[in-house]
Image 1 (cartoon, rainbow, N blue to C red):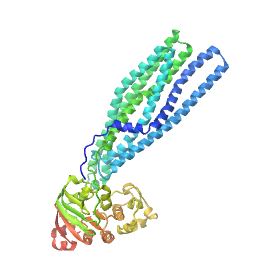
Image 2: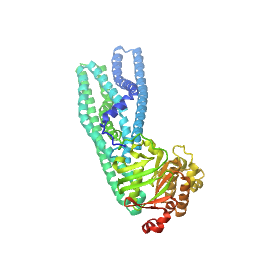
Image 3: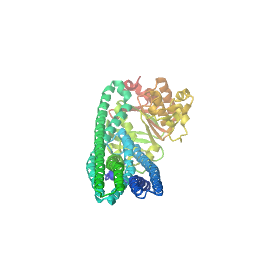
Image 4: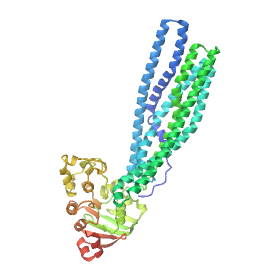
Length: 566
């Protein structure tokens, strides 16, 4: 694996353009229908003015009936265009938000991590709230255009009655938009900061949930809670700031729109009083002054939503445009399943060197837990090959030269804190539904008592993070999943720390039996697992200091005896 070239980050505008481009069909139809809706809304007071003018002039029942029919057509058009227009736009909005959620989540779940300074809780916030707010641009643009249509229709209609009324609407709208554009920029920056603080609070929650048990163990839970209270308070205060800015924006928009409507009404009244427009045109002007409030409100709010969508798109770009930490190779390992660690230096590891032959069962007794964690991280490819010295070879091929698919197919590293997912026992053991060794894995991991305890057996429901299972049951379930994968090389990191000694002894024998003929490495201090291994490597201060069978080491090495004896 090699370090990738630095790529030019894709700006938020590209994300917004992509969303607009692939939804242009829905947006065109939505714009047409919402334009009809706004035009119908604006046509209503115009029709009323014409009705008043012609009724007073002709005083004909036929003209009155025709006028009522025209109003019915306008009302029907308004109702249907709104219903179907919003249905089209909201469907496109929801679909687009789902696309971005999947894309952001896919980046977060890729086997090769991306070089972005964000935690899982922050990525979750980006994949939910930011994806939704970015997709709002699908509705914002058609509503902006349709509101503009209403303002233009009103300005033209008023201009036909008197040019001064039309100019008043145009100039007033331009002035309102100029004032609000300044506030909308403040909303965008405040919203971006709020989303960042909410994301940090979410990341802190995720960290607390993961480490709650050990925190309780050494009494650090109160300090952790105080830390969360601090970040959550910051998020709350920023949310209040955003709410204040939004309130100021909405209040300013409403006040300016009311001033414009009032100015149109007063100007029309003065013109009618002066005899420059007739009664029908006065009714039309007063009606438009009232009806134009709604499209003006929408028109003035759209810049705010555009800035919010842009701020959210910028946060999504942090994930979507971040380069991977490393670029995977394309090679495949040779058949056999041997594993070689050649002079690896990383963290606490110091020129670590050993080889596990194909089909061998090797246990590693690490005197320092940090060294065990560093070794597991290197083998799991959680540490990029260019971030440590030396080489890890699988089937004679450097790990950095292998494709991700080849590594995952050949080598499985099961961590001591393997995740348990909401679902059933069966879906946790065999997520893909393709394993042929589920019964053997259940038996080897001693999960049989958990299966027998429930009427549903393997179909027993499991809550998120295994909340309805004990610590030992969760650990055995994770072990069963690793065994069911039946990989060529299996690395287990402390797989039995939460089970009793008798169960641990049975698991050790079962794992050795099930994995016979396949390469297995167990990083552990369990005497039971150490005893069933073909040989034991002692890892002390980052290097292998001794190598023999468990019983020979017990007899000859006092430090080893002290470290593993229970």
